[in-house]
Image (cartoon, rainbow, N blue to C red; front, side, top):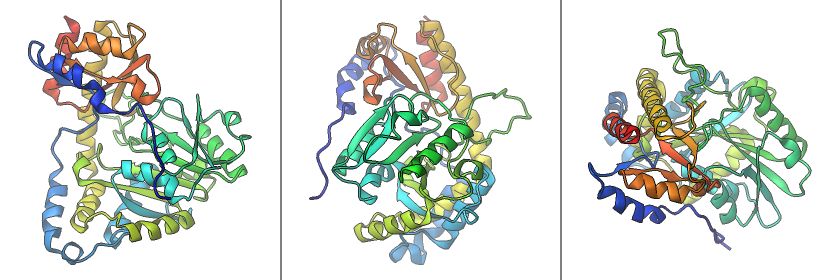
Length: 382
């Protein structure tokens, strides 16, 4: 039948009028709505891309499963940053053309259909729902997926989306809560789909001291104490878009249950969902260049701190998020669109909470430049 129809409030054209207002404001528009990186791609990544520009994996067809070097780099990254030994838990990996593609095609590549149910948080990244709809499956939204009683006994549940750190809220799940989700899903034969694209962006407990470990990652669904030493029924997604500013490179991957990865890889090969060869080399370099990741981590921590203080000055009740790259606030008016209109008058564009399932909230992104964040802070404090 092909892709099924989908419906979603996630339509960026809906904020076009607010952007026109913001552009007319004194000083022009400051866009804090989208999570698109603005900082330089690390030198290591650019050099690797250039070196690989005429490799056999560039002028010939690249491997769907990733080059041996890329696969090794992914395994090294898991060991160095996530405390995960992929081989020990019998996990496999497959690169994806960006994480959004991985999310959107997930339900389809897992062969979900009309009678199948995919659980997701009520407030979440919109593509979870869109991907489920494209497969023709049913969406079940719950307040908290860690409350397994809200979905464990629902007929037809085949998968559960977990997002920690969360876009948009910044919530971070403990290892214990994640382990509970994995155990409950296994009891009913469901797959845990863990979106961990912001895994290295943790701010809880950060002190800005020299003793801080900026790569102290959040709990991973493939960590032994979470998955009970086995990748069975668990798939983790990760992207280099935020850690290495590689959004335009479309470099991400899925890791986990080797039987599920094998099946998905076979389909991906047939439909040509393959990262270009030079981008695979760049991706391997990005995964290994943890010093550049630390530099980017410091940039985002500083920007988030400035943004949180400014939003407080404007009247929002908020604190530093536990993780991810956004400040999630309740609208002062109680309605995201009313607040969007008021913010646009001073030239600031936020992301309406309705896009994520919470029309009473707004999301502000820290992926703008230092100058943009500083200018926004000045306007919010007036």
